[in-house]
Image (tube, rainbow, N blue to C red; front, side):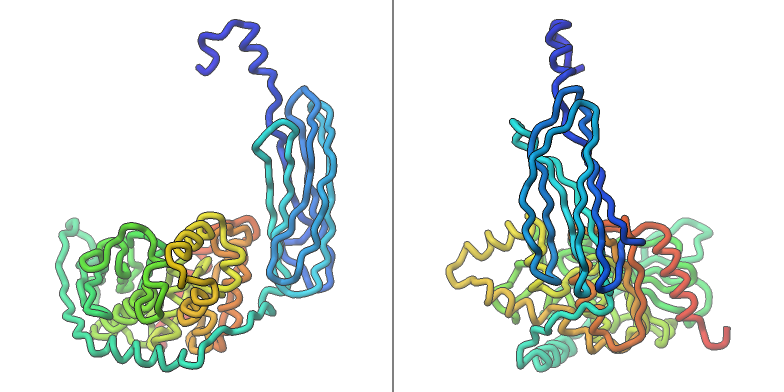
Length: 425
């Protein structure tokens, strides 16, 4: 125990030291959403869990790219022992968008602060961000796809051992992608007669995709783009700096190859006679959500696109809203060379911004969003989603962050079954 070796008086003194305040933050927006023109009231309850008086400062902060947020001055805080004080903040939502409101207690004499945040949204399908396409955007991707087509895929299937009685055959798939890079994935094929629906699963950032086990009767390719999982033959997985690799030039940027890896995976699925060419789905979360958007945009053979908590969207606003980790990483990268400027970075990123690719997506698209996501801000995800001309649907989960859970997956599986059912079923 931490108190071993202390006298009773010393132990008592330690135990009575003031502890941090406990903050509860709520908003009166049903489901975390409101309409344009509505006023949302944020309520912060600050409980002094100590028997000693709590002194300090309380402040509100607003983070959004929808409008210029008004600064709020800190107020003095004095709460008697075991008592609670309530603070309110009113915010009128005049335009569509998302707003994260935070409240912070800075206790006198303490270096650390206690913060709670709550994000709300307003008319999400009306969020539009100005496109950042360069003049040669379409030519760049046409040329990139042509260069991929010049690479012989050299598909190789390595049969993997399976338990007796299983109804699925498992293989490791190896193939050549853009630049001759070897990429791999895990292919699961039902033993029943096809043609089967096919699901292409793509990874989150640094994720190692593995077989799913129960494919539900579908052919499933759990695919690892270059540098991920078992696709490290030619592109190293470390350091985990994929998003700044090659950022100096669009020709060499990491996501040029990564997007085309996914197209090559579609090439493979379409080469199989047992795949129903009208029932091919791509599904991923976070980076995988962005890869789903990009693949559906670059390859019209995708029949259903599922992008959960998607990244790789609306880069300009993402860099404004990015957390400290990303901000520090990009700052360090830019500082390594004098030629690296924010303008140059955004120009390269614009070629890989799924917002600029979205108008190419012609298949039905589903998107799941965690409203409190600290990694992929919802406003950036909707910047891509709202540019898709095809049929689309979404779900926002009020209390979810960077992960959506069982209810979302149940919705997705039901939608897949409904939308991809064979015509004669």
